[in-house]
Length: 568
Image 1 (tube, one colour):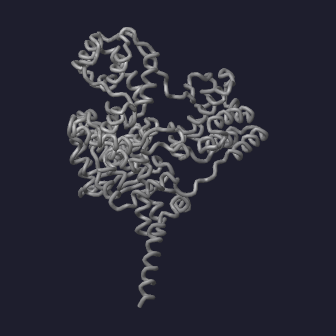
Image 2: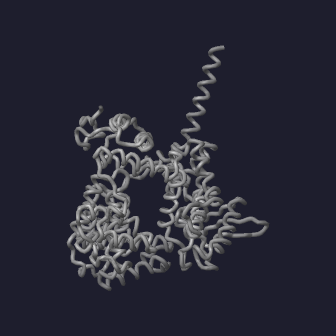
């Protein structure tokens, strides 16, 4: 028997004496109170979960709070398992822990409920509210076991349920399961007439940092609007005027950052009614006060956004022609908070790209769009979910051939951005005003991708949008393009679910350059054009080192050749 060694850093917060998976396996092999099939399933579940964690069973503690964050990171597809197979393995492992009293046994039979709860639960099962049943099932059985009648459920009972989840859950996030249960309960209050009328409170997870614009005095907003108009259409003859107009995307970012620093100033204790104009945030003392409030959430460490806000205040001091002492103070703040320029891609992205250097993994990603488009998920999928899967497949396919930013991908207009000059050729075109660096982009789409686009456009209605919707990735009412963040989230989740790879939308740009430089070491000018960078120096700064794989491989081959030559 191997118990937790508290001296091991990895087990620092695991209670001393907690048994390991290996101990449960040994006990199961000799237990007589289980059928042969059930005993085998439990042992298999423990082994499969340990294997997924990359550890032998003797190094996996039977402790939910240790298992939860680690199992939550596992993607079944990365293990070549279906979601159902992985769920069964985790369920069997948990059942083994429950058999020996480490976690509580789950109750699933309606007959185990009291008459009051049975009546309500049968109403839920008979209803068409499919989102309620899986969310509140655990909560209902928990309340029943505690002897809490439906009409007496209160906030304290929901809090107790969260504590029970923290003790007994091994794979799902207790907080997420708790919030789903409370939301499911409140949904039942609204939609099921027989359900108790008690609504359970749920604290918002959002931290409100940026105040609503209407919270500020009208004079402040008027000055912000006037500044945006001035930057969008500068007067070439006016003194201190910019010579070039700013793009709508840049103006939107400036406006958000102005409201953000004004909000930070208010959160620091400055009266909101005193923010009557831009002078309030450009006063170096107030600017420092707002920036210090931002730093209070980062451990006094400057971040990219803090640095950008400080730089914007400095620039606004010049644009609005503030007195010299004001500009000097803002310049000093920007200098102190200047972030160190990023050299190369981040370590996290390098780690993710390293996985894609494996030809088998890269091939799984490259083949995903066609497979997903041609064979969307079956099972319980309806026509909407199948159409949604095809839309995700199309987005991934475009990113593989056209490594554009997610904002440009989400905003593709079927007529404006997909140019068809004839002979079956299709180009994806973005003008300089639509691209971050002001460099027009144009991609010649391969035939397979064109056919995928045309088929999707012909079959997506009415499931995804109304007929005639001009956006390739539309909102469901067809009123405009999808939010870029929403599309990015869907792409990441889809890839993780289908092939088990952690891949965000921006990583496609790094993946494209990695493949290009691996085949063409040093060819940064083509990489610059591919990504739409304004200067090749930026491309070199960002991606120097991605040729390391081909360089080290060539060097290894050289040394092997020399070695063989010396033996002759």
